[in-house]
Length: 120
Image (cartoon, rainbow, N blue to C red; front, top):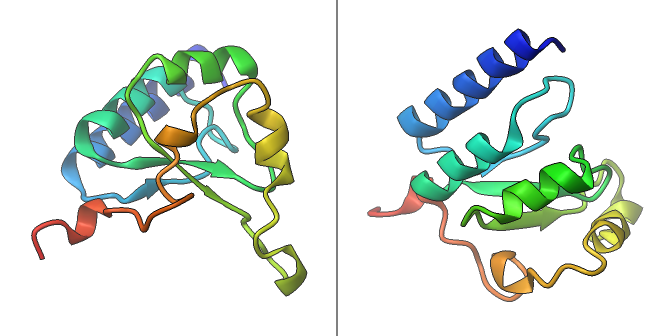
């Protein structure tokens, strides 16, 4: 995508996060490129979790480092499309090798407090 398209997509994501109680932003940067840090900042501000997908992570290491500069929390999943892949997170484990962010992954030990359910 061109820089103009990335800027427009980034703005669209941020406006959606601000306006709607989105629990999880999944597949960031997949098929539609965005500037990941401003989107992660919006997620952090409004309580939307950023997915780390078990099939593919569509951020390079530099983008991921910029996301780590925010206070965004992550949710991991296997993105299983078949029963034998349920719980498969080796792609995530390999990507996160060397990063100590377990405290920012909300669904490892606890049930996440989803934004759309708060106050209900």
